[in-house]
Image (cartoon, rainbow, N blue to C red):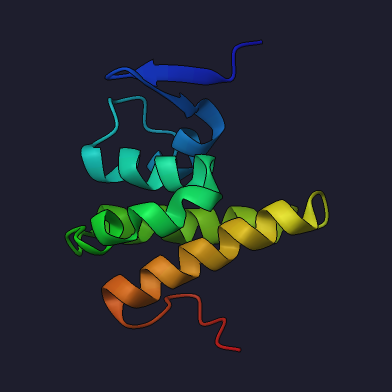
Length: 107
């Protein structure tokens, strides 16, 4: 099974794109593709941080981050390390861009 898709010469996880887009079959926007790059390879977040912080505060970006947080909470027991990493990234980006979390989660 091919679980990756190539868009503009870069490969993305179909699952990550599905989560971020809410299953929308339209071509993902550039902001969603940037988020997908971060979630596909979390260790690259450090190097993509400036680009991520330049994202516009759009509803679709916030909803994408919210969907990722929900996905992580639902599947945390399957892969604690992986989903914890995704959850931390999603919350960090949401806090940095929007100043707070829609789902709370303040520790």
